[in-house]
Length: 466
Image (tube, rainbow, N blue to C red; front, side, top):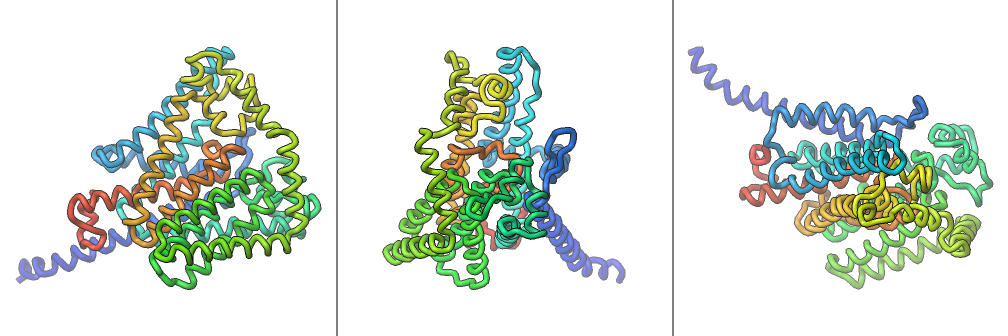
């Protein structure tokens, strides 16, 4: 009787164990993604003249986790045919960046300098791979990931808005996130000339991050209209996120961010015209909405808009201003075909051209890493763009939100990079890579399941994705 009883109880006990394991995976994955996304809200600390944030600590933990993962499972997602292209691009990008920077420093300025800037690429790769794995294995739903992302962005943008208003809370937040005393002084200017910097600590970087928020909100709104999905509270959150992001772009005073915002909006309208069923109605709806929102912002923030017009006028009068001079100084270091192909390294550029780096990122990357480095970096972004484009029509609702947000973000950051850094941003550069990794992971998952004749609805689909 005892043997029969044990046999009968086995399937039930097994189901309990499997269910407990799945719940534990869900809890750990959710906690990890909330922590990674929330790193953007935690102020950085200066230790020994080096800015260190929670994203740096998280990256170290992820290194340990991924080393264990690769040792325990050599045949994994990132080394299979599916993920080999992305993995290869990341590895080549980081390896060549380190080698070119070290050799450039030794050859041109006769100094050995560790290429500390490559740590930013390592962090981005780790954040990217983490969400790629979670998405591929469907450890949490894309809806939960969207919720996490939206709430973190809203908190960040509320912090940015509070910095605009005088008072103990706004002043405290301004002092908490400022990178330099100069940035803190900018937050004390009169209202019309004030430039906030949110959790980025620098106005230009904050404007670019706010454009990313616009891309996320428009991605959700476009996907919802295309699928004719009515979720009122979710739509309300997206509209609120959009308004908060627009206000922060306005108060950042960043010309590069405003140019990127126009690029994101134009591309969003084009995507809507391509994919919406009622194209004319959609076009009228969004163009009319743009006119109304522009009119309201003009009425509510007239003095602020005059300040922005003045900044653009100054840029035109100066024929591009300091950034043109930075580009000329950087490109003057490329004197032969070898320099153009491999670059001169970051240490050389900062020593002989611009000490803080050329703020026109395509030129910065070209001077640092040469044509080869530029091809690797923009090749990675191109592959992500292609995967996201393929996911727009085939993915489920929330995966489609994130796919559209990825396309809009890439377009916005490409334009923005002509006025500031995307790859090299220190404080708020990680969050976009969480979305990029998620979209790539969902693309791999859906492609693999289709190849095996399964779907996410298949009860044992996770076994297919081992």
